[in-house]
Amino acid sequence: MTQQADATHPDLVTVGVPTHWYNLAAELDEPIPPHLHPATREPVAPEDLAPLFASGLIAQEASTETYIAIPEPVREIYAMWRPSPLIRARRFEQALNTGARIYVKYEGVSPVGSHKTNSAVAQAYYNSIDGVRKLTTETGAGQWGSALAFAGAQFGLDIEVWQVRASYDSKPYRGHLIRTYGGTVHPSPSDLTEAGRAILASDPNTTGSLGMAVSEAVEVAASEPDTRYALGSVLNHVVLHQSVIGQEAVDQLALLEPGGADVVFGCAGGGSNLAGLAFPFLREKIHGRSNPRVVAAEPAACPSITQGEYRYDHGDVAGLTPLLKMHTLGMDFVPDPIHAGGLRYHGMAPALSHTVELGLVEAVAISQHDAFAAGVQFARSQGIVPAPESTHAIAAAAAQVADDPREQVVVIGLSGHGQLDLPAYAEYLDGKF
Image 1 (cartoon, rainbow, N blue to C red):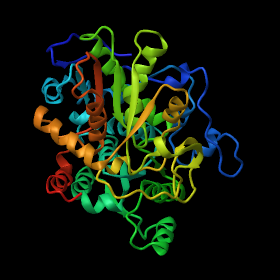
Image 2 (image 1 turned 90 degrees about the vertical axis):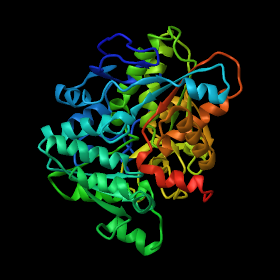
Image 3 (image 1 turned 135 degrees about the vertical axis):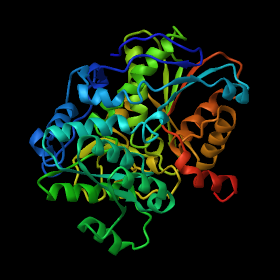
Image 4 (image 1 turned 90 degrees about the horizontal axis):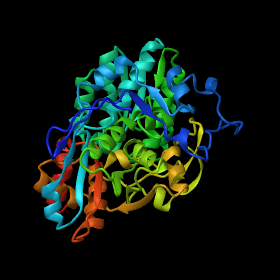
């Protein structure tokens, strides 16, 4: 649900800021399998999640409502950058020699330069009204950590972040941004937690993983009574918050393409970015208003959908989280230290995994080299340097429409900018991959 506005430019379309989050789970004939308690293997109850999450978020995790009103304090902060632009990528079309009309939904206009702020603001708000003092979290590339640090500053919360070691070392500017917003950041695994110390004892030179960082953040949150945990992807309430992306995109596209999208591409690591973009398009499919394909572009180094198993697994290495039914490479899987740190997660969001199983979403695996090649081509044609994560979606789209004269309406989720990832682009340009 969005407030309507008129298009103001043929290549840069705007609509109103959404008033509600959209919950695809409420419209699926087959429900998403429940999260299970690791000890009893029974569906988790709200009280099981209370030590980690705010009460409002727990209610959203299992909600069967189709639309959930966005609280006014959250909408006021959203209005700082939302609606994000839907841009017709005409020069990229020319570079690809394609008959497709390509639109990019650009989340890089948010304060931290990515889509992560959409959920960070909501999570900080719900924790603040519960009287929480501090939030702990994990982060890969640092986009989620910096988003939560920004959100914490808006609601007066302390933020403590465990950043995957490979990204902590290679992306120092994200850490600087977290600190600038008032947060604290540690490399993970660290010697500050039992989980971190155990991992380091086993492999002192590990490059880390999101699963390891989750274990450390959860351990600290569970041990401090005034502290809660915030997850940047995977869980249903995070997917819900990100639905503002797709709701805007559907309305923006309708002003230019009455038939809607033919295919929607998004990068997929934990799944919230792609689900946030794609689920409102799947709503249009369910109600017969359009018939889009949805393509998840995941890294070949961490291909949870294309090569993982669909089963229950923990979301972290130490086994502290509930069991989630998802596509997974295994909780102890440590991916190669690719530059798309936000996609280095062993599992995929249960909601997104479920739509894959229902045949509503398909997936492709993209190599790091092909992703950056597409990112450079996009930057040279359109001027926007994409985040390494977003380059996977761009590469998947380019592979499917290049040199194809057919007219197709293509939507690409450009989940963030890559201005703080230029050392990664330099390595690609210098042939060091």
